Image (cartoon, rainbow, N blue to C red):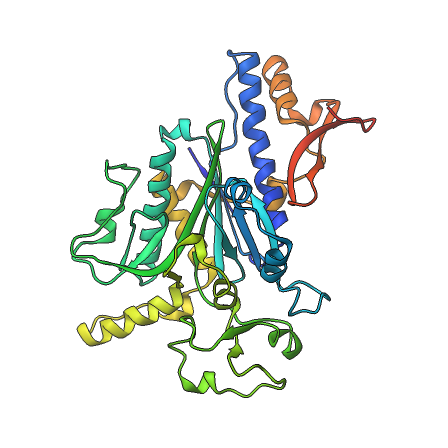
Length: 397
C-alpha cells in the first residue's frame, strides 16, 4: 500500500480544491461500480491520496447545518466583506459544503488537508477515522514544537495547559479506544483550538478533512487592501502583540474601536463563532510554538526548534508522514504527485479503462475509448462540481 501526496504551495480558490477532490472520488466510485458489475475484476481504486493546500479567504458551513439554520443574504454579505470592500470585491468567499460540522474559515496560513481513501481497505469505521485524523494532527503538532495538545468531546485538536504523558504514546497508529477523547495524563484543555475537523464519508470513501492553523499570514495586496481587514480592539487574537502594534498609525481614518488585522487567520476567525463553540477561540502553530519555547526556556536548557522551519510545506510533509504512520504505510511508500496525476479533463473514463484492461489485457495508450472525463456544474451557487461523462459528440450521460 502506498500513500499519494499532492501539496499546492500557493493559495488556491476553494472550488479548485473541490475539483481535485471530486476527480479522486469519481475514480473510487467508478471502481466500485465496475466491481458491482463484475466481481471477478481486481480493484484498482486509487491509493489513499492526501491533498494539502491553503485557500484564499473562505467561509464554509456543513450543508446539513445550513439547511436547518439558513444564513440570510446580509449575514453572507458580512462574511464575505462586501460592505467593507464597497461591493468592488469580496474580502472572502462563502460556500456550503457536504462535510459535517458548522461554520468555519479557511485562509492563507492554514494547512487544509483532504484525505480521499476507502475506509474498508483499512478496516476503519467513520468514528475511528476521526480519531485517526486527530491522532495524526497531534503528532504533527508535537513534531513542530507544540506537544501540549489533546482532544475533547468537541471535535478537533485543542491546546492543553500541561501534560504528563507523551503525545507519541497517546496518539499512535489507528487504535480506536472506547472513549470519545484522548486526554493525556495531567492535561487540562484550554479554550484554544488549533485544528478543525470536518469530513464526509460516502459509499465508504472519505473526503474533506482538517484545517490545521500554522501561522497568521500577513494581509497581501498593498495598503489599500490591508486596511479593509480590521479587527475590534481588545480581541483575543492580538492580545499578545503588545501596545506597539495596537498604536501603529494608519493612512486612513479607522474607527476608534478597530485596528488593522495582523493576518488572514486573526481577521477571519474574529468574525465568527468558529464551529459554533461559544467562548472558544482558535490559535496557530507559530503562536503556540513561541509560547512553548518561552516556557521551555524557563524550565529546561534543551534546544528548541526554530520558528523559521515552520512553513506550510514542512508541516504538510510532516502531516503526510504521520498520516502514513497512522495508516500503517512506510514513510518510503509516500509518493509526491502533481495535479496532472489527478486532474486531466481528457483522461479516459476510469471504469471503461478498467473493464477494457481486465478483459483484453491491452495497455491504456492502445485503447480507443469512446468516453472522456468532462466537468459539469451541478450548482453554480455552491461552487460544488462533480465529474460527469460526455461522449465525443458532447452529449452527457
